[in-house]
Image (tube, rainbow, N blue to C red; front, side, top):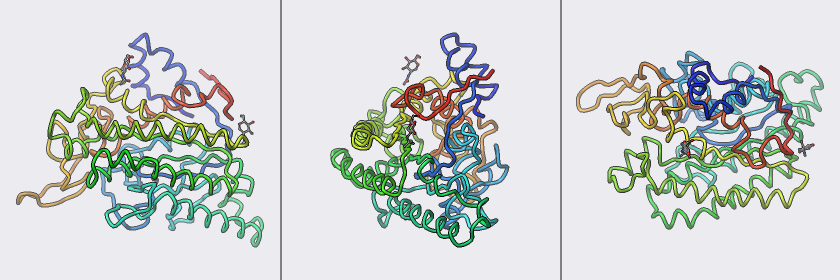
Length: 386
Ligand SMILES: *[C@@H]1O[C@H](CO)[C@@H](O)[C@H](O)[C@H]1NC(C)=O
Ligand SMILES: *[C@@H]1O[C@H](CO)[C@@H](O)[C@H](O)[C@H]1NC(C)=O
């Protein structure tokens, strides 16, 4: 069950105005879904890119929860892990993980780090664009139905039942890399002009899933990518490009413009398909609020990477990543973690720490950042337990 860590709760309790936040998150929320099918990028990749062999992760990745690297770009759990926990479902296995007879009974994760909505290009980190992930889902579903028909009950404990494909929750967190990647080769105006194309591709993937039987959608909007050390280091050297929090303004503006159009798309789809539930979750506002008001939420560093190289203010160097060993300027460097990752919002200069993910998840589960908000007509039972 989802609950804030004791540390976060105590810190919240010190601030009277946030008392209600704490009591909401301390309660458990039960979602009524038998399975989850997830699509996205590193925000929710539980092992696909690593299983595909395109990249590898070294310790200290995973150290805060799994003790070893777990295929996640994080010191511990991701938002999706906390949400699965809140739904009383096991962590999602990655579609591409082939060793150890992975169990997909309660769903499957198609998200892969570095993925974009638009088809991958020669410069893409991940070839697993949204459409490829949707194709993987189609293959997954067909194979599940075939196994169930041919082998009967033998595979029951490893694969979802047929009705889970309709009753399950389809979660999405993708689009951030479409924008971030574009800044390397396009002007701001060109990037803004490309947003409708990005969202048309997203819409066509959603429609395929709907035609495959998906009826419950849960869509995270795009994060404030201008607040990520990697982008600040590369695009924020001219301080006039930074906002009052030290984030690259035009990156966040692009994210907000994408989110406005994404929200409009969700509203349109809801009107067209009244037999589907589509929830839009404003993760941007949760993350931006965390970065702006970090000390109130129990953090000490809003932007500086915990596991990075180079020291303050960002502790980030694009030449070497968390856990890597390399010779830089004639010196052998191994990138280690800071002494307490729970003080940092950012883990490796690109991704959030487990502590930040836990806070963000608690805010998502408060229901206040969703359209429609939970208490309304969503398929959730809100149970307050103290
Ligand atoms: C920071 O907290 C204050 C007080 O609750 C709030 O008014 C403000 O909107 C927050 N900042 C952001 C960026 O959300
Ligand atoms: C959508 O949510 C409503 C309200 O919780 C629920 O009754 C309905 O079954 C859901 N629709 C689908 C298609 O699952």
